[in-house]
Length: 360
Image (cartoon, rainbow, N blue to C red; front, side, top):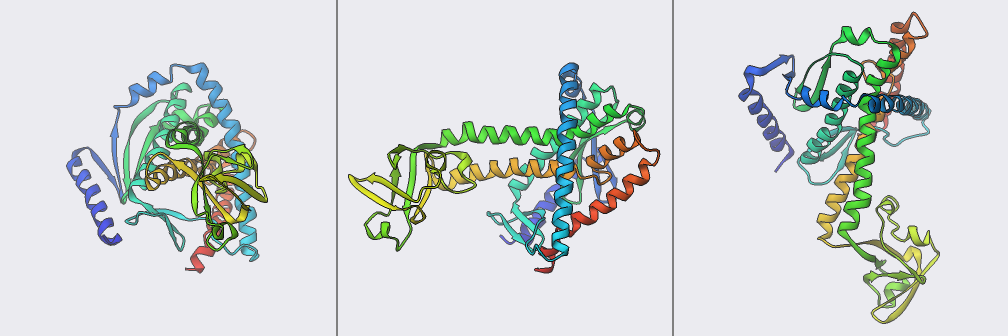
């Protein structure tokens, strides 16, 4: 099915849902808002553990300020390198759904399967907004409503706070509320990473490592093609989720050896490490296995990325709110300073798209 048809069906589906609930929908331009108070009871019940959330809030501020400094410095450093011509590859992409089953780039766009796109929005947005709500209630800021929204065809969620009550709170309270969203994204990412590493990966993989000879190599010529090996260089081996990034599924036990020796089918083989490809032993179809693991990996990576980008000092992002609240505690010109820093940082961020835009 062509992407144009797929996109049209997605738009029609969202339009149908909006039409069916039209009596409760508020429209602001291309943004459709559905408010409710249904989840306020849940937020209030969770926020009763005030002492825990106070400590968590203090930790979130420290974590988010450090991430803000690091991310902002990285954006400006990369921006300067792009403008000087030292970096010619894309550093930023706009994430959009695609009818294709594989992740691919197209100019400044990163296109992912629509099911993964919708799942990513849910994983990123729901914890983000609920943490804002929980921390707001802990700081005794009134929540006016929670709800869902659709901007054009992009779904989202929100927690609407009383701005007047929020502005009256001391700086530390506001910092805890503003940092809560990105902190939730980092907590979600940590959970997904640990869940994939400690639960999903062990459940779907077996002992040993799949070794495959590169065609034309000495190992290939010796008659070995591919097989499961449980011991390499005299050391028991098995694959580990943390080895996925490098693709070297022997690194936990062996590092990166120059040569590998192993036994397979009653014969001993020896080869240069570069002549061998490594992979996990899967208990399910390899295609299904990598679909599950890659999806979970994408979700925790996008949670970290969105949480970090949201902390850039660009108003009205949470990072801009944090910057403005902190500036108000030390300067009488917090609004002007926030606008200046926001424009400067936004310009640096947009610069990251230049290589992909001009390369087509």
